[in-house]
Image (tube, rainbow, N blue to C red; front, side, top):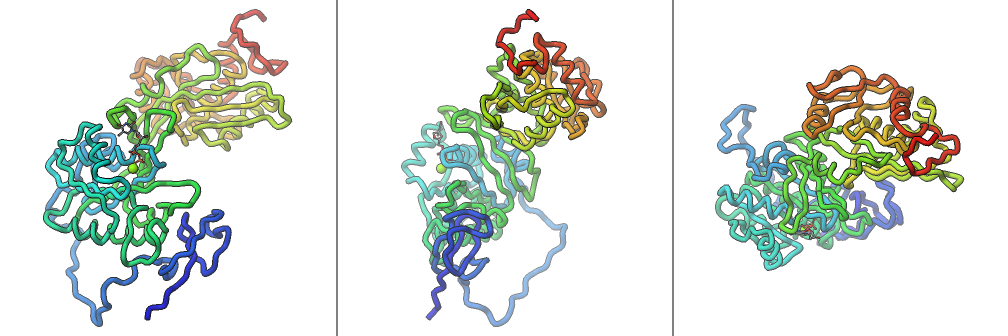
Length: 478
Ligand code: TYD
Ligand code: MG
């Protein structure tokens, strides 16, 4: 009789232990370790399903060039989605689509399935979470019930693979979600890391042999109770994450890993009551509702992959009553903010040590570019001084520890987008791209101090108020 192995597996990173412990040493997660039966080691996947053969089988070896019968990529019919995958789904590839529950993954994939089915491709949607009737109801609400998408509510991967193998292989198969799938080859309970990994392995093998593009949906939960799909990340060809703020309408699809395309592209969608709508011009969306007259806001000309994106950076600098002033950031790196604050103090002649600083990227967007430094600095100085920044100006540039403003990539694309959206001026680093794109005046900076002086001279208030407090009126009474 086969020996039953008792192992303890971290449900967030997949590390295996031979006894229970409170904290996973691999990922430092607390209470993530759960007893599983049947896992056989660190790579515990499906137990061998075929009897071992005494001799190997000879298979044909092929060259790099060869006949490709079908188009290697199948466009989904949704431009924002194709942009992220790099021009459509690659046949035989597996994509993991992660995101918080309720963010809109099922909605997006239902829309993609319907769009692709309309082009005559065979598309199968397997739901492990919702009953067929529920999925139909959603499709009806989205106005997609006429699309020829094949639908099933099923959770056993062996049955799924068997069903999909009947007839013409589907161009696209959606598995919603990988956490609900289970395979007979692994004894652990559904939802555990071992099951998720085993099921994913079986589905990946199916994708590679049939040429079907498979999308695995994975819920990312923070508490580690449900197996994190992170363990699947290294097995799949591409990982995309669907992000957004529950309080905001738009959603961003971001490629995190992509063996067949770029990883820095984003797709922007807006959640409407008719499902997800594509947003071909996100800058206009992110700048909508901007308050031109308020100090502390600056428009950052950013880039997401090859796409320029203008966003509003909001700062609030207020005198603190705390011994240790607050620094709160939404949508940007807090360490980066600390650095910009330190540089402003050291090289810009600004005192912020007794002020609370709040920074927000408008609309719930998350930016990671160092090029946002200059816009952040401008917003901070503007808030502190009470001087409104000129509304038709965009900012971009990286700030070094010496206070030097350093050039950033793709300046021409940023300037072009700003011009397109009606901006008249760009404050940017000296060097690359300077001189503008006909029609846009540029102010090239060498040092952060130049900008601080510029904002102060524009504004009704001095930059470093002596009392550290600026009354909210903008009159020039002093
Ligand atoms: P869903 O796609 O079920 O999320 P996930 O699969 O990522 O868990 O989306 C659920 C949310 O989307 C739900 O809060 C309702 C909202 N929604 C709309 O606002 N409009 C729509 O047309 C649909 C179908 C959903
Ligand atoms: Mg769902």
